[in-house]
Amino acid sequence: MTGRYSWHELWMLFLIVLGIFGIFSGLALVVGFAAMAMLTSGIAWAWNRLAPVDLSYRRELSESRVFPGEETTIRLTLTNWKPLPLPRVRIEDEIPEELRISADAHAGTGPNVQSLRHAASISWYERITWAYTVRCDQPGLYRLGSATIETGDLFGFFSNSRTERGSEYLLVYPRVVPLYELGIQSVRPLGETMSGEPLFEDPARPSGIREYRQGDPLKIVDWMATARLRSLHVRSFEPTAASTVMLVVAVETMSRRWEGYSRAYLSRVITAAASLAAYAAERGSMLGLFSNGTPILADRPMKIPPSRAPEQLNVILEALATIRPFDVGPMADQLGEHSRRFPPGATLAIVAAVIQPELVEVIDDLRRRGRKLVVIYVGPPPCQPMPDGVRTHEIGDYFDRIGVGSEYAPA
Image (tube, rainbow, N blue to C red):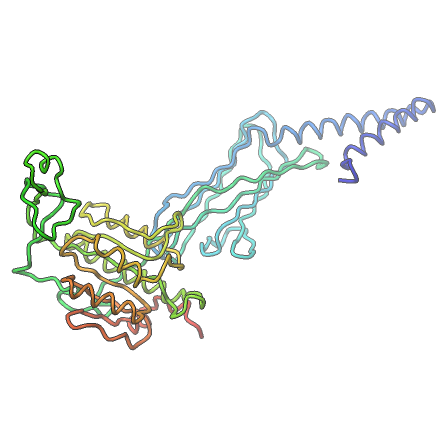
């Protein structure tokens, strides 16, 4: 803009003045030049205004969910749906820097993002497609950034651009490692028993009603039966010997919250939790998740009720992939507050990189209340001493051997 007017408005004003001057001066050549220039400018202006009309741009991922190290294809499609060719179209796509794009891409870099740039001319009713291989080694949920599309007229006099917000996501699952590679080589790493294990009532298998006993939770009270029989009755369930595993994932990676977080230890916490989830799911256990971290798309503790559904493992892996490193409160407080809502008889598998004395106290309290607990410690040795009866796996050194988290470790 020049003052209140753009350059093309000033140019048209100049041509009008030039034409009037030629008419009054009797200079036919000047009048002809002004008329041709005005006609050309008008065509260019109209072309530029019509260029973005019915011009679509679409991005597609061949796979929107992958594991670390796997590849997917991003397909970019530009389509001109009108009978007007476009001599120049420039496109710039913002891509998260964690995604590695195939070498044949014309890419630029910037803070936290990289860009894919294309320049092309497109005929009427034509479609142009670009395809690139994308690879990501770090778990997470990555949103493709905005795309800026710039078009112009045939003569290059005018240009316009529009920006389309990205809505495509690529989810990279956490790495799943066999437990023996993490140094968890016990036959029963979560304390499972092969025979004679206690029976627990399965809430998914109702069997009738019975009289209330001291200690029964109020949530199983059958109020209709209570009113009909005039005494407190609760719903009963068939017993089951199937194990239930609650993954308790603590996202603290520093002793003091103001110190920030360690990407290395958070990566190890997520990998250990994902590996335990896969182990439990393979053995048919009911599997649930509780974490004091928050997912990317919500601002609340992560709680996934136990289930043996076929898709439960995927649900938990997706939740682990989207955990943010900042907690909603210390795990000691969160676990103490929510533990009473965990199913009776469930094994609590606590995965942590930092264990404060307050968390040890909560673990001891849960042990005294009859909870089965296993602690998986991925931080620097030594781990805080645990109460008697709490199985502990210290596996930090094993992550160094397999290279998980070492890419973030300080030199």
